[in-house]
Length: 246
Image (cartoon, rainbow, N blue to C red; front, side, top):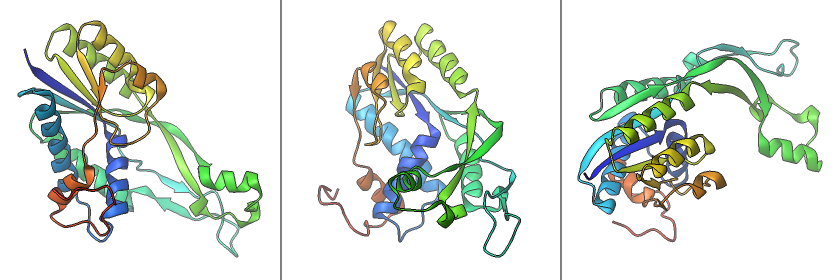
């Protein structure tokens, strides 16, 4: 058997893709189709690299976008009541919703949707907090742009555990590629390796949780700039010095 399966942390995947797009292709629009095509290019790249001709399935884990009407933490100048934010009207909501619809129709892909907690809170952005602690900024100078709304995903860990157990114990694949970076995937990786499955991590050049890096058999990331060039159909705005045009 030379089957391969992919477990993708959807939120992490999109964040990394948007980072590379923002850095190197900011003058070009990033579409849902671009992200879908890029995912399948990564799948094909790993299949070729690992000599695994048969794709068992891609499992894509995510949660619906936030759809609430929220009140910002701070009022605008001259006002006493903070303004509201309608999440459904934002481009990020529309993008993620359309992405999920597209992925649900994609071949050999299982969309595993969790839920968002009913409770969330506004939090100060980490860089802003550092500036406050260092005294580089004052609390009275904060604006609503210095905050983000934090809402936890639920049930995703359980779905990962069920899927990895099914794949491993039923011998659906002998190789699993994780497109992820955090410790949520550690139990899955440990179980798979215990039963002889080869576990490869693709963190898309991002930082990896130390525990996850301990429980893998290898790590590989591809040239995302080249792959974005292919799916967008345009040269990067400012190619990185290390980039090999291919």
